Image 1 (cartoon, one colour):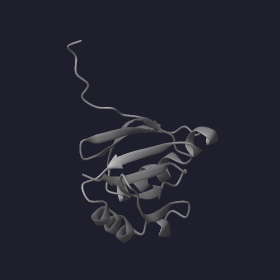
Image 2: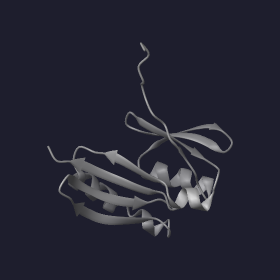
Image 3: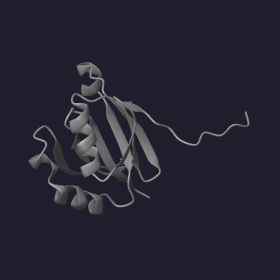
Length: 121
């Protein structure tokens, strides 16, 4: 095969599409509305599709891991946003120190669990 992959973009559901769009923008992501009910959300060179679709079992079991250069620094950034003040279902969990690396967790307003972590070198 000569074709190379250039990105991977999972589809993420949302219980309240407009609220989730706003949440990700406040998180620092860049949004492009593609059509009613579908946006591409970008974080540096990474991206995912946010859709106006909610299946509780699917959303409740969706987890995304994003590797960041410095989880301590990124955690401080996340804590400073205080997103839980505007999004009662959102929450930030402290850094967990593991044998493979360190990570912190963000639950978005729909319940998607985001892991932001740094691997040990």
